[in-house]
Length: 217
Image: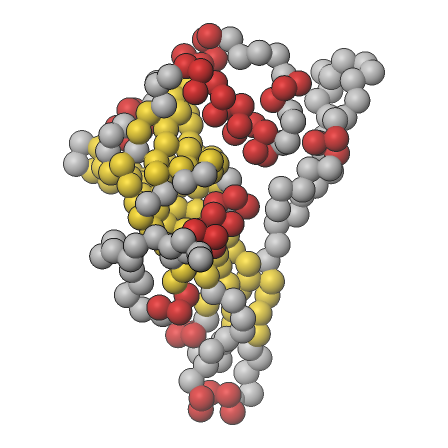
């Protein structure tokens, strides 16, 4: 049986309910394919939204940043809203009203926590690198104590939120299908380019498989 998140006043869709998904399988799949996220929070009574990278481990999502960041200090033990969005296509209809986007998105709500234990923090930051580039972390020079001190790691349980997904072509008013106006979809895809070596790479250092075969999308 598929596990689902509870539908709450914050997470329920007010319209187009068919696009809402509360099952963890859909939510996890979107989190796992798009590392870019935005974290919203309130600091000194004012709203802020911070772009950063996220990764999921089980029923938790994590993000990190500089220990000097006022934003991360404000997020500790605070209610936050984390969003991830992917554009899959532009949808052109026969009226401006029905133009749309094919998208996959997740919005999560919860109380952020700071990962304090040094060993746990080190392990999770290693997981972050390996999540993007499998096996890379073990090939790197070990993190210095100052590296960990300079980095803040935040997390949140995935316990409230929803995914929203739109696919397919335009959905026009029935009478508009008789109009001589082109309608349809323009697909959008992110493309991974060829790796560009650092000119300061040492002679004889070969490109590793996790770079050569990188295909996160």
